Length: 51
View 1: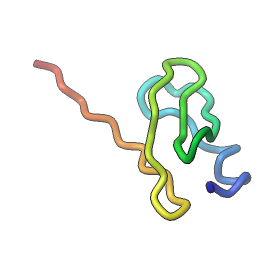
View 2: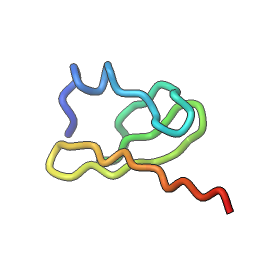
View 3: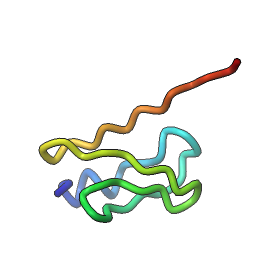
View 4: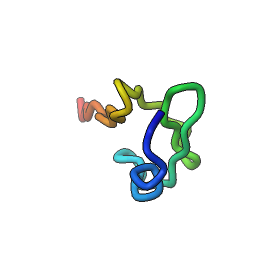
């Protein structure tokens, strides 16, 4: 579970949209990208492939 204060300031690194916690993951409300949560810490990394 992610701290509510942290969740309130997080934004999706892919589209900068608002996020919420669902099923032990973080989900972007705009682009629907999911991010894992490891011991309460969101792992919000996006692979950037331009090829």
